[in-house]
Length: 369
Image 1 (tube, one colour):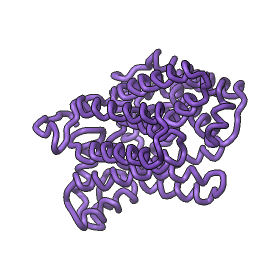
Image 2 (cartoon, one colour):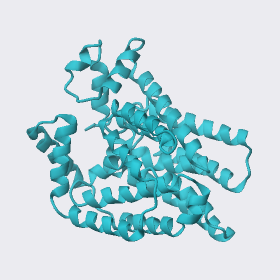
Image 3 (cartoon, helix red, strand yellow):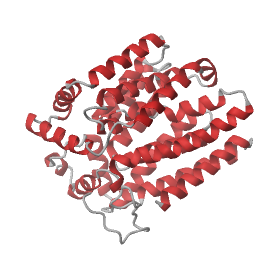
Image 4 (cartoon, helix red, strand yellow):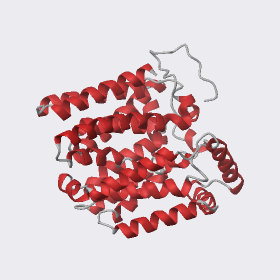
């Protein structure tokens, strides 16, 4: 836990600097750059840490030439296969590949954070704590970063927006979900929002989500019926360890209420507000749809939508005029981001604790990875 605690503490300090002091652009960029390096090195130099470790390592080792990945039974998208193949023309080191992957992923993500956030250091803090649980999802992380980068073109250059989603699909087919942002740049009536959420809660108590997931899995990944049933069985076994948290439910609904009440002020602070808010609503819909059947999918299926919290929370903070309540809200957000860390890794905490890297805890052997 020490590595995670030190990283979070450092990001907290940077956030405090940003909140209390009018630091100039050069210093802010320096702090952002330092945060970038710390997180990149943590992701790049890990070993047997994070989700899907074995499958990605086996894939990397199996790729030997341009034809080898065509015969691999891993269902990996061509973009990731080609990236691995090109890298292996120069090196067989998986750690160096993870370094390249991390540099690409976080360079794109940090570029988007600087573009979309008024308070990048606080946003980076929330981003780190809320997404640490998907460390290891190599393909989907790249797809997410590419989609988010393309979001800036949604209003002005829609063709570019669609192009970036298309590129992202070459790394993870689920990037198709990002097309929904096409309908998010508008203000929906609260009655409509509550109606959709209520329907999601009702449908989530039935077997419809499992049946739909099974069909979509077969369509998008080519998994046969038998394999699809096996996959669902494996997910359900994992779900036994992940229950619907009442506190998590209260947190989500409370934040939704605060975001909606302060929507006018938040929209003035950031022109991307409607996109973020509607993405957050959609993440709630996914949450309620799968909370009773495939809870584990909430961690992966809503990845393209629940990231919106990293932008909405800083906007909410700076929509508060009272100095006292603004200070109170700031420390509440820091504490909340700390809880995000636990929530993020909890479904797979055996893969994250303790942190093992090539230079740290290298003697530790993690089983069942």
